[in-house]
Image (cartoon, rainbow, N blue to C red; front, side):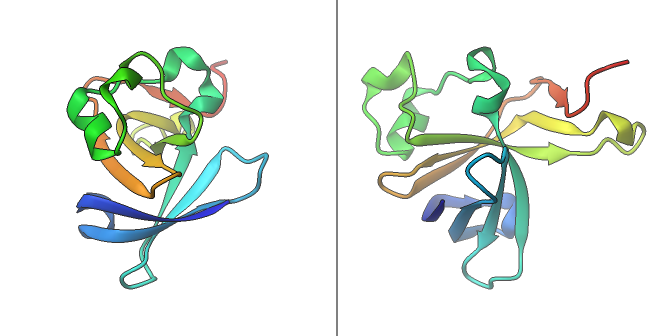
Length: 132
């Protein structure tokens, strides 16, 4: 899967780029690469939040839905063609707890290419590896 996407407010982690490319590593993969299409060299690894289960999916605000070109009626559940992604984070103090950072999300409407970066302060880091 590969999509051209546009962040109307820019993508902070990619130097404020508005034009990006979203690539899924493979159909089975939980990983995506978001690439700055403006310079081609900046990339960000993202994880598929849907793979964590429905309880991990965030609720979007009316403003967030509008930024993705979706109607307010979608407040209850997101359509499958909206990719819900998050940054991957490796804590400096405990690298073994690397995982999905649900506090820094990326939403992509794959039908129209509209994308949005959103923060959810206080949201958890879900480790890649189960706790021992």
